[in-house]
Amino acid sequence: MLTELEKQIIRELQQGLPLVARPYLALSKKLGLSEDELIAKINEMISSGLIRRFGAALRHQKLGYTANAMVVWDVPDELAADTGQLLAGMAEVTHCYQRPRQSGWPYNLFTVIHGQTREQCEDLASVMAEKIGVPNYMLLFSIIELKKSSMQYFAD
Amino acid sequence: MSVEQTDKQLLHLIQSNFPVVPHPFAEIGQQLGISEQEVLERIARLQQEGIIRRLGGLFDSRKVGYTGTLCALQVPEADIDRAASIINSYPGITHNYLRNHHYNMWFTLLAPSEQHINDILTEIKQKTGLMNILNLPALNIFKVRVNFNLSEVQHVD
Image (cartoon, rainbow over all chains, first blue to last red; front, top):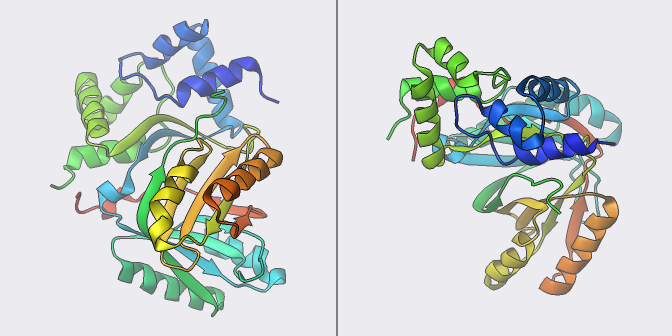
């Protein structure tokens, strides 16, 4: 369970750091803490993993990564954990999840890869397929981004 | 337009492990050999250009106490705008993409509990009239990484 203070810090940090010389001092005043206390608390939230990453979220399309592909794999269930670890170890894979199969949906491992072209993603997927020995896979390209936002927790 | 070298180094540096110290922008400036003021100006410009979406914390939704899922649905071509505006109106829907598959609309949903997720999905079915939604919550998370290798970056649109 999070404390009320942690929730308040999350609410502030998800708004973004103020672009001033001492951003933590500015935030600490809003929270009724000292600058040192807030810095200690944020470091604690980073080491506990509550803050997964602290820094700038970038728009990768603007940086030339125009093709992102969700590659879905149909992996025998007993191999899913090992295969998932193997895929996760590849630098080009940014996300790797196991999800349930459903009727009409046989794929149980989901990876996201980013490339500068679709062709690059396709080549990469075929290299991945060979490496994990899984022939049943499919690339789903994003055609249109309909929404991309950062979650606002505890927004009420 | 190409991303200029100092911007590239700056972005690389602040993607993760942004300094949590009293003068973070001065510390970054020291590493890049530029002034604190120049760091602030560059970040402000990169935000304005939309290259930086946000400077702050990215949270582990599970540790925050939220639960999430990935959903897919089949939307007829003519119905895409209507369905998207209904679906995107929920704040917990953070990503929504059209993809090249007969399940053509894929969105992620975060909510305080599984009950909330089910309620929202039921509402979406009622409002859109689209009943066939795949609900694919993660059973195992092997990797979530959002850093990009900026050394490969060549062009900006």
